[in-house]
Length: 144
Image 1 (tube, rainbow, N blue to C red):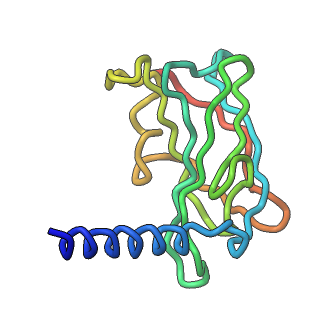
Image 2: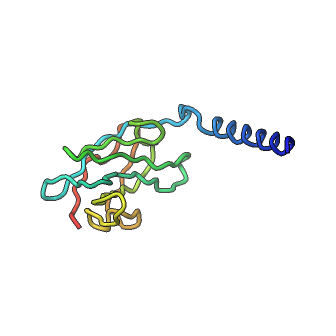
């Protein structure tokens, strides 16, 4: 019993240590601040209990690190600020497909925006993030 407990303690310490090592400060990843806004073509703001924008990396040979950046869409003015590692840090330089996930409720699957915006294969938005920021930061969507 004591031997099993000792092994379990060692296993727990090893897993904890690997978690701490793997979850560093993120300082080795360079991000570029990206802020923008989202609205419908009639000027209203896409709102729901879930309202997020995701920048999904497009795989390319010159993009060393690829990681999704996302942000909440503010219900008051449609603004967003992207996060990759730490809140508000932005996105890693590269090319992204822009996905919008706006649901009326947390548990429901009822989308507020047109279906095409919810999938990287069908979204019309592709953005390049570089040292100058993002090539597009204002998005106008159609309602569902």
